[in-house]
Length: 107
Image 1 (cartoon, helix red, strand yellow):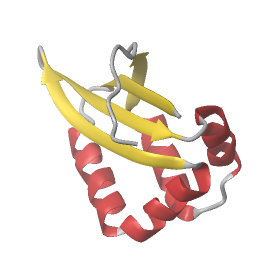
Image 2 (cartoon, helix red, strand yellow):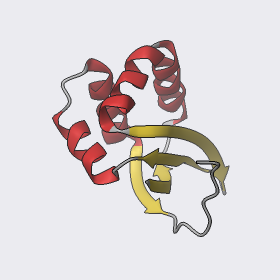
Image 3 (cartoon, rainbow, N blue to C red):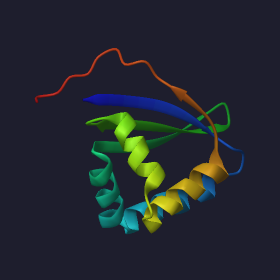
Image 4 (cartoon, rainbow, N blue to C red):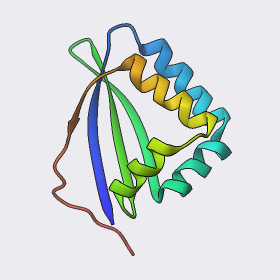
């Protein structure tokens, strides 16, 4: 099992695009869930946080095999994945991965 957490710095003035992206993902949740199932992702959670007037996304992902998930995502032809890829390209400035210190689960 792979666990990843990253803090993504957003480009300036992307907060509205973030809201639109989140709404799209939530409105099309069955498609979004289908993609994570295809990728072997068990949990994908995204939070937003403002620090010193800069916006960040905090991404938490638990997957069976993160490398495989990335490979599947790169080859995906699903429209919802294209929406997500465009959002990343337009709004993500940098990604800073966190180091896992503790992972508790009942499984």
